[in-house]
Image 1 (cartoon, one colour):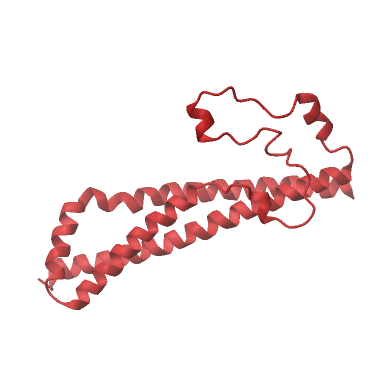
Image 2 (cartoon, helix red, strand yellow):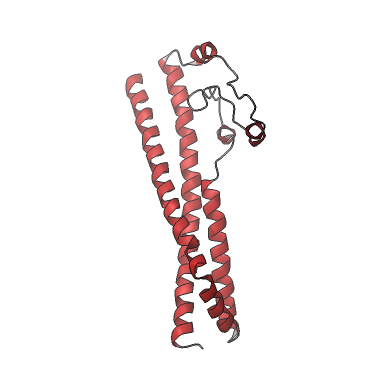
Length: 186
């Protein structure tokens, strides 16, 4: 039974990591879309000034559009931000994190700037001694890793979904405002 459990966990981790990579591709696509208005910023601001002068309904629509755009940028950048100390978000007895970190401490900005001699905190022999010895230990480590990558997937998925909805909001309002500007309001 433990062989099947181990295989299940390996496949589950691989599937979750593949989903994270797919979300990252979507985030890259969103970067292009979200920053596209900057290419036409002078036309957008010119039209917005004219619409702003017409009535309060356009003012409200312009404010909502701008707010949605700014929030979509904020959520977009939060999608690519890494989660620090993700194991603190997981409850229960946790094995030592040798699957991902392998005894390597996170490198800080300060240590990079000092060109400090960056080395692992443990020796290879210590790392080998920490590897799972039994199927039960391996299942424990793989389960912990599965929970971590699942949390990362959910974090990225939620943030990218919010960013997508905000992008659809400002795109839709922008199209409506553009039509109003070109064909009727001014």
